[in-house]
Image 1: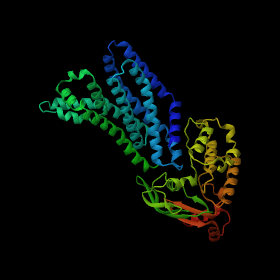
Image 2: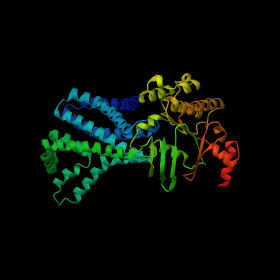
Image 3: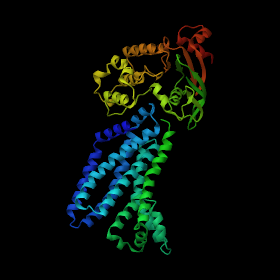
Image 4: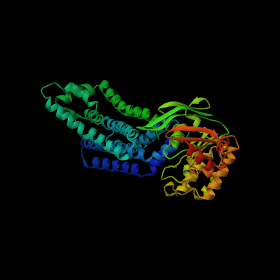
Length: 255
Length: 235
């Protein structure tokens, strides 16, 4: 397994997208912290960028990478290697390189400018999002045999998680404004890891006071130790369930 | 050594394999013959576990291959169309395979790599290779780890006459080591001096699996091309 991970990582480093991603994150984070005089405000802008860029790059790059490694996978499948080893090595290789890129790109500036609990929560959330979207990309790539179809799916999924879901929630809240939906919102937010990350980070800042009654409910739940760890557990599930399903499918896939 | 029992596989509506049962033993050199789309490659891929049959099972040395993966260390497989990571060079692919398979270098068989002079072009990227050179890489990889079973899917397609001759010599040499060799090919004249058995497939079914000598006696023909032509015309 170690050897296959090694070859996957060498291959990822060879095409320089991951290095570009690191530099891009580094440039954005550094410039935000240098532009804003108040580092909390900087953190808020950074949060919005991370929640858009990290899922997009992770899901697209991973899906395209898996499709392009088709030959590599085919070569390994006829060798005495477990199928689960092959897929897990792909997942590990991709996650390790994306997580390292994220930690260098945003972790170093955060350590320099904002080494607070909020900053560390943001780093943790970014790592979790990376794992989640690599795993979702893997699931799509295992299910959709056609590359164009798979990448289309991946873009739709990203749109859903970062835009459509929020629109849907606004719609529901508006339509059912007569009903007490605030408590249900806690449950609904678990359906989208990006929202969950946003809530986790915002609650560590003071701006959550401006979020109204729903914000107060969120604070009551996610503000506690129990709620915080529940949210982390839900995000880990978001990373492992797609991986688990794709492993099961991949074991019986015809190549 | 390899036993397939009632193996069936459907791709959508197409029956690629329909109740195929065969027994392949050590020391045999089997020619897998059949028209295009008769399920030869699907059958080979299911032997390797690359295609999972819908029904039936395959055993390798009396162990079901479904949940086993280690048996593949004893099979050398040369695919019909070798597909390799585009941005790796020949040397890198060879080294990677050696690295992944924990086989001692003294036990490796690098004869074909030398015969095909792959070392002289070790730096060429796989993407730039011609079909024939790709076939040479595939062949070298199949023989590299000295496997007990060799499965060669259209081994000579795209190879030049010199390389074909080298490969044929190598197959004969391995046959004498009491290995199981399975070859598919449409060029029957090439199989003449190699094979001891013929397995004929059509429409996903195994029509017959007999010794070449028996077939020769049945049809009173000498050359394999004529033997097969006379059998098929009677079917």
